[in-house]
Amino acid sequence: MEGWSKLQSSLANLNLGQSANRLAKGFNSSVQATRERLGQVAPDEITELPQGMHAHSLLPKYKDLEAQVEALRIAHQTILRVTKAFESETYDYPSQIQESVAELGANITRGVTNFAANNLKGTNLPAPSPAAAPVAQHKTLPHALGRAASTAASTLVGAPGGNDDRLGQALAEYAGAWEKIAHARVQHDETIAHGFLAPWQQTLQTSINVAVKARQAVRVSRLELDSAKQTLKNASPSKQEHARLEVENGEDDLVQKTEVAITLMKAVLDNPESIKNLNELVKAQLQFYSYAAEALSAVQGEIEELSVAAEGDYRKSRDH
Image (cartoon, rainbow, N blue to C red; front, side, top):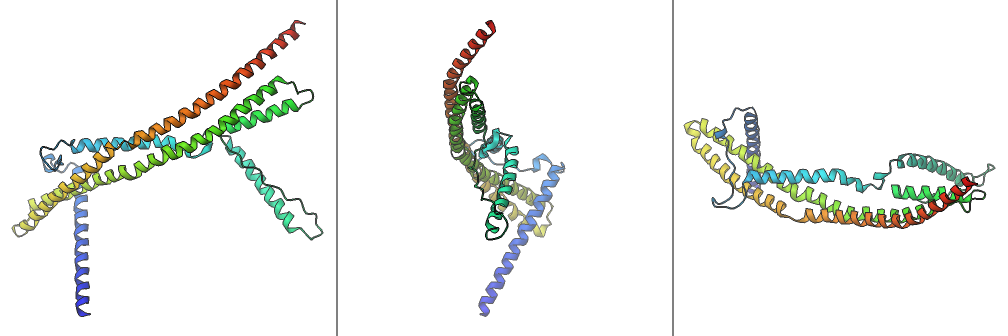
């Protein structure tokens, strides 16, 4: 037991020593970064990042890779900022807000009615009949156009003497086209969500962010190295050897982290996944708009015939 206690104590001291060393390095790095930002460090005292492990390496320069990865990250965020709208089906139908408020009021009224129907049974008070919940409706512009045209057509055709109302017939045709387009619109959004948005966000959150963190690790390592060089420069004779070892360790650490960062950055830049994802987005949009154009083209011919007939009847009535 005594030996185990000594071992625990030694490990605790070692961990405390490592933690203190990390804290000291972190503090020194912050000081170094601040001095550089304030222009208190000469350019020749800032370590140039190595290009690669070998002098004859054909890898792009580290700074070029950094700039390319940053551009890739910004490009992903820029597209995602807009295309995330496809995750909510109401993106093209602002009026859904008013509809949702009206539905909320109706739900509250139905809830009160059903509560009364269930709790007034067996009492002398009249119990209302339970109200059934309405069928959920999609809140997209195609669905709304289809519903509105269908309602308008029913209103016109259902009016006295309105069975032959051409506008009602045209609206019914229009409603039929938008009902088909609305179904395609739901499929369009689902395809984009799974084929584009999910993998696009995954790339941003994983491989791109991993490369960014590797870059950050290089920056921290470089700051630690330059801080160690400043310490060596100002070290007393008794601390020269320790300070020199810290610089050597810092140089090794920087080379290692730079090589890791270069590998990760090249991997994310060479990955074709993003352009494949973009192709899936375009395919989904092309399929939807082609189908919508076909549906509207078909119904437009029928509505044009009704329009020509209505205009002919109108001119005849004016001539008489």
